[in-house]
Image (cartoon, rainbow, N blue to C red; front, side, top):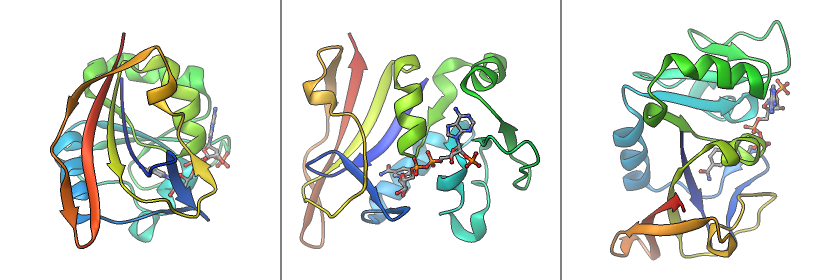
Length: 162
Ligand SMILES: NC(=O)c1ccc[n+]([C@@H]2O[C@H](COP(=O)([O-])OP(=O)(O)OC[C@H]3O[C@@H](n4cnc5c(N)ncnc54)[C@H](OP(=O)(O)O)[C@@H]3O)[C@@H](O)[C@H]2O)c1
């Protein structure tokens, strides 16, 4: 399984249940990676999407502990174990963990690749991703050139588990 995440210089990922920044080319890259694939996300992240609806053109698997929770045509699972069982039906390379905070932390041990958008800024934040640069289990295998959105620099960095 793979992780897709956008972080700032402090590995912050969100504030007050919102993303820190919206960069059109980052959304485009996210769509390119995940279209036709399986995306795994927490109930709170789903509710930040437009109309709280699952992502089109992808199999959405949502984690919630609420046994009666429903969200469009998404598959709902209620525990880490149930998710791990459910994704056995798919090619593991086609499964993308897309957040948020609690889901990243629980599934990082099961992932072997992380595609990280690094935004060169420091935002006010209340949600963070583990710093992979300080984790000896992970190494950088690919790094894009710096890209710019107005006055913001960002780049795409791919990490793999050693
Ligand atoms: N920068 C990025 O790339 C990025 C991407 C995605 C999200 N985010 C940010 O991340 C933040 C949200 O993170 P979050 O941790 O608050 O919410 P979250 O991880 O999206 O969702 C948390 C919810 O998921 C369910 N859940 C979590 N673990 C579960 C488990 N083991 N079994 C069953 N259900 C489980 C629970 O739902 P119930 O309460 O329904 O039981 C829990 O309340 C926001 O700020 C968002 O913008 C950032």
